[in-house]
Image (cartoon, rainbow, N blue to C red; front, side, top):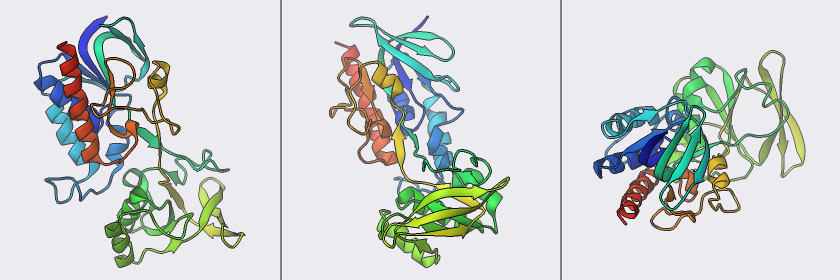
Length: 303
C-alpha cells in the first residue's frame, strides 16, 4: 500500500486549498476525489463575492485552483473513499473504490450534495425534465417555461442564470420571503422573475418528459397544476459523511462533522474542512478551513 503524510478526501475548494498548503509544507499528500471534477462547485454559474474576482464561474475558479494544487499534490479522480480506519496512533488506513492507502493523517473535505424534493415523479424524470444544475442543463431549456424550486442563494443565482440564457423561469418558494442575499433579491426584481410564494411541489408529472407539476399552497390549502418543461431543484444540501461516520467521527444532528477552531475532529489526526462542517457555506470559508486543516495536520505530524 502506498503511504502518505496527508490524504485529502475531496477535491473542492477546501480540499484543493488544503493540498496547496500541505504541499508547500513539504508533506507527501494526495487528493482522492470521487468525481471527475470538484462536484457541486462546478455547477455555480456566476460568483461575484470571491475576493480578487469581480465575476467568475465555479468551474473557472476551480480549474485555476486545481492547476495550482497539482503543482504540489497529485489528484486521483473517480476514486471514492469507502472506509477510513485508524490503525494506531501513527497510521490510518484509507480504502477506496480502487485500492488501499496508509496515511499519517486525513483531511475530510467531501462537501455535500443537492437535497432532493422526495416527491412522486422526481426520480423518474431525472434527466427528462428534473435538473439539479442550471449551468449543466439550462441550455436545453432556452425559450421554454421552467420552474426553479428554492429560496436561497443557489436558487436565486441559478434563476438569474436561466433568465440570462433565455429560459422563462419562475421561482417556487415554500415561504413568503426569500432567504437569498438582498443583492440577489434585487437582481431578481430587476429581471422581473416571478415568484410563486408559500408553495411546495407535491408531484412532478409528464409522459416521456416533464410537462407539469402539482403545487400545494400551504397558506391557502389549495392545489394547482402548473405547466412547465423543466424543474430545477435548489433546496439545500446534505453532507456526504458516510466514510467519516464509519470512522467514528462525531457529527451534529444534521450530519455535519463537528470540528474545533483548528479543524480537528474527535479522532486524532482526522480533520474536516469546507461544507462538510456545516456553518457558513461560502467558498472563502471553505478555503480558509482547508488552509487551517492542512496547517494543523502539519503541526500535529511534527509532534
